[in-house]
Length: 119
Image 1 (spheres, rainbow, N blue to C red):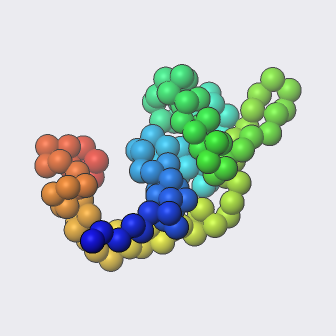
Image 2 (image 1 turned 90 degrees about the horizontal axis):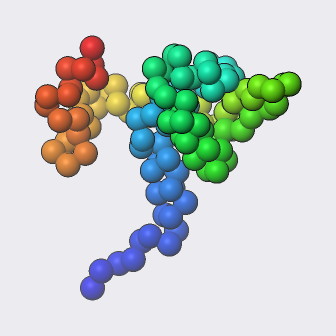
């Protein structure tokens, strides 16, 4: 008989899914250093405005970021300082486990793209 663990885990699963996308994680990492406009993020991440806006909307819907309007510009920022703690903890865990996560056969980075990510 299988044990159904998902009801209590659903919010955490949603949180980690939102953090699991490389673009959203890059945006959060950038916003960890201070607020930014869409134009700043598109230039720094070298992504299309529509892509950045789509991911910002997702992160906003999750309550992880918000924006303040100044004239016709919107400045995005993290909403919760705990998110910085979570990101720092993840970096420490990754450092402690070395390449274990990257080498995972199910969720790891494919061998041919590992050089681009590490470089």
